[in-house]
Structure formats: C-alpha cells, structure tokens
Image 1 (cartoon, helix red, strand yellow):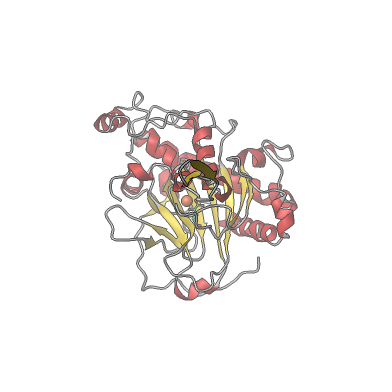
Image 2 (cartoon, helix red, strand yellow):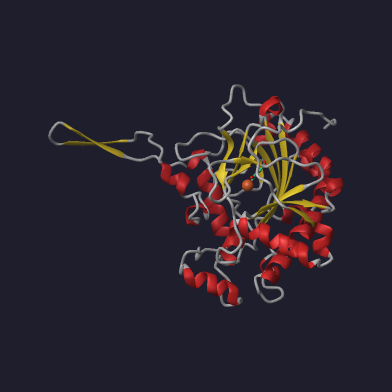
Length: 373
Ligand SMILES: O=C(O)CCC(=O)C(=O)O
Ligand SMILES: [Fe+2]
C-alpha cells in the first residue's frame, strides 16, 4: 500500500486517556512500569504500548491486507470462514450482526491462524488466498512471532502479579498447541452518510486472552466503567493498543478487565478514508478449560469467593470461541416458528422469518457480568 496521508485525529472528540506502557521497561523488570501495567490491566483493560519491537513489521501486514482485499469477491469467498464457528479465513462485510436486531457489520477481515503461520508451508487448519501465501514467510510469520513474544511477555508479568505459579498461564498458551490465536487485518470502507454513532464492528469484548492492535485512523471506541458514553482511542504513531480479553478476565476471576469496545466510522475529516487495522489475538490452547485459577492463586481465590460461580464458563477455549463466532453470523440467526390461530380449529405453523435476538445474545462473552454497564 502506498504511504497515504490523512487528516490528523481531531482534538475535539471525546477520547480516553490510556496509560502508555514501555515494553522495553517491562522486559527489563522495571517495578514502577510493572505497577503501571497492572493498573492499566485491572482498571480499564486497555493501554498503549511503546517500544514493542513490531514497529517495522506492521506496514507489510497492512500491505498483505490491502492485496487480499483487492482480490475479486468470488476469489475471497473461496476462503470464507463459513457459518460453522470457525474464525480463520476471510470474512465478508455483512456476514456478522452488530446488535441484537441483526444489523449487519460493514467490515471485511482476513484472519490467519497462528498455527497455520507456524506450520507453513504445511497447513494446520486451512488454506488461504494467494496474497496471504505469498507473504506468509516474509511478512506474516515474523509478525506472528513478534506478537507472540510481546503478548506472552505481558501475560507472564501479569500472571506473576496475580500470584500464579510460574508457567500457569504459559502452559495454557503453548506455541505448539492448537488454539484460536490469529492475526487479523480489517478493512472498513468509508461509510456514506453514516451517523457517527453507528458501529461498523459491533460492541464486544475480545474472545481470547490478549489483543495487540495497530491503528492508523480513529474509530475504535471503548466504554470505560462508570463513564457517560463511548470514548475514542486516539491512534498514536508507533504505539500499539493492548487489551485484556475474556479468557484472562475469567482466569483471574475478574481481577483483569476485559472491556467493551467497538469500531465506528473514523471521526470528522478522517471519515472520508478507508480504515485499516491490524490485530494479533492470543487465545488459550483449544483444550484449556475456561475457569478462574482460584486453586493456584490466593488473590484469585479471594476475588472469586466474593462472586461464586460468576466466572465459571464451564467450557473449553475452543467451545467458547466457536459459540461466539458462530452466533455472530447473520446466517445463523434463529428463525422462530410462529403459530397463528385461524378460525376455530386450524393451527397453522408459519415460518415467519422473525430472526431472534437470542442468537446475538449467544455470541456474547463476559459483557453481562460487568456491573458497571
Ligand atoms: O479495528 C479496531 O480498532 C478494533 C478491532 C477489534 O476490536 C477486533 O477485531 O476485535
Ligand atoms: Fe475487539
């Protein structure tokens, strides 16, 4: 993608002042910086990360995304993620609902599995468009490797602060075990006459443990606890945006916060431009049970004892992930059978396509467990 210049993020829209965490200091074990990371991860669950080391790898990932989205739709559709609860592959705009009434999303994704990137040229889960294959070795695998290093380091530091034994979180995120971990490039085309409050990617918490996000244009918004509304996260060049996902909220019994967020059209003059974003999602091994690690940490036990049962998902990471992916898909929205009583004795079952909000609700994660909303 040629370097595109676009208008500055405006200074008169509501933004959330995220803490800036220095990854180099975290790696060096700097105690005050680890304290700040802990504050960010427990209070809002979102922060900026600088000196992360992936700065030189993101442009090529955006190029891979742009090359992929330029393919004809019928070519991309050969690699579509499908309706069965699988995330890897291409997702067309409008495949997912953004709310319980079934409003369609407006974004395209290309999702590449960590297992496929590491197995290349073999395949672990599925095949991808030619534009992905062409950049697997040069672009995608290096980005996946760097993202794994960043995310695993931050997860290890947080797990220490949670009082977990060495390796408790690491064993649940093994490089060699299959998981839902993936990298994603998102394309949001300019939305004509869109209201600034209409989501292109609906309000959600992230499905996995940890997300490492790279934004150029605005549009990402979070709903901070106790706040009066959605706030933009202003992109800062060279700074990634990190956030805690549902799995870490569950493992920690709610001590780490998985916050609700969404994507709307970029603000003000930026909205005329196509928005690209790049994420690496770390998710637990497929076979990991999602439950608080109360037997391994006194701090987590104390948190869980106050809200017994609240964070017991009772499913594996793979099941949790598949349920959420599957129930977002518009094609999976339930068709309710409605009975119409005609005359005195004719009960006619008519399949009126009233598509139920229950499918949307079944795609939800920990959102309903957070009292602040
Ligand atoms: O595009 C963004 O800034 C955020 C994307 C996101 O939240 C997601 O893909 O889960
Ligand atoms: Fe997200």
